Image 1 (cartoon, rainbow, N blue to C red):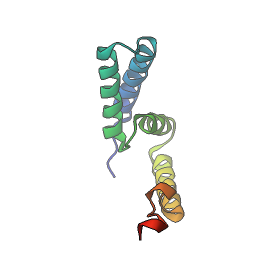
Image 2 (image 1 turned 180 degrees about the vertical axis):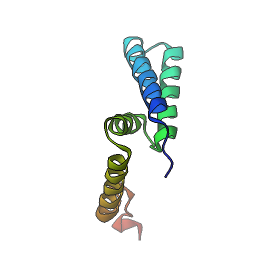
Image 3 (image 1 turned 45 degrees about the vertical axis):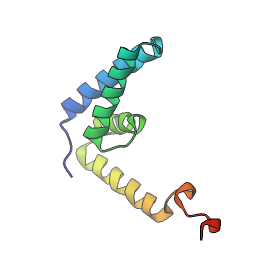
Image 4 (image 1 turned 135 degrees about the horizontal axis):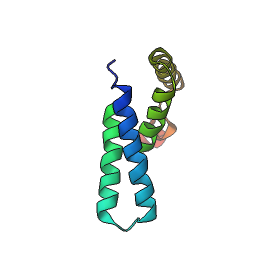
Length: 97
């Protein structure tokens, strides 16, 4: 698994947090909202997450741990998710048979 440089993750997380504050201060400003969403998308791509909030949390974990510890934590999360199966909403309903 390739991971981005910590300096780049830190830079993008800082950018995301700055635009998050700006968006919360001016939620009706479309330019601010678009830039905030772009910053979130960038974090998602960097960290392989589907949602900006998850990406920001993953970035914070990645920055505060060593590379080995982060990879172990990711492996643990994947194995636990596989063990517990998909969320109930993803399972076919009995009526759908």
